Amino acid sequence: MSRTETLLAYDAVHPAFAGHFPTRPIVPGVLLLDAALHHICTAHDLCVRTCRIVAAKFLSAVGPGEALQLSHVADGQGVVRFELRAASDARLVAAGQVQCAAAQTASDSSP
Figure 1 (cartoon, one colour):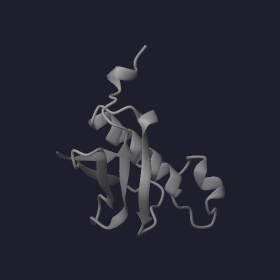
Figure 2 (figure 1 turned 45 degrees about the vertical axis):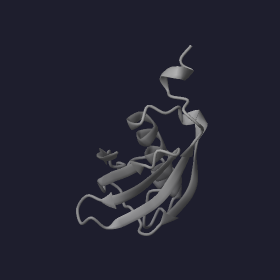
Figure 3 (figure 1 turned 120 degrees about the horizontal axis):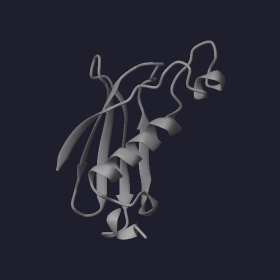
Figure 4 (figure 1 turned 60 degrees about the vertical axis):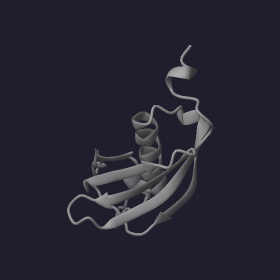
């Protein structure tokens, strides 16, 4: 299954920019990975607590307000491969893999 979603851009007033390089602000990689993980888990009805990022590579910096596209595909074996691209020019920003524990969905973990 393949999906593409638009991620919200990080506004220039986001608190992460104050310390993540004040003279040339960029989105910290941890914010990109957190957004990717949560979007992937939601799209595939997976419990975020049972998934982890097993590989990630950052290829290009993301500035304040820059819109991103997330594409991901599950292999049926619990691995989801993803790419983040700049919406303006399709520049590859980051890529990686999420590994999820066998078949616990988000709905299974509800009280």
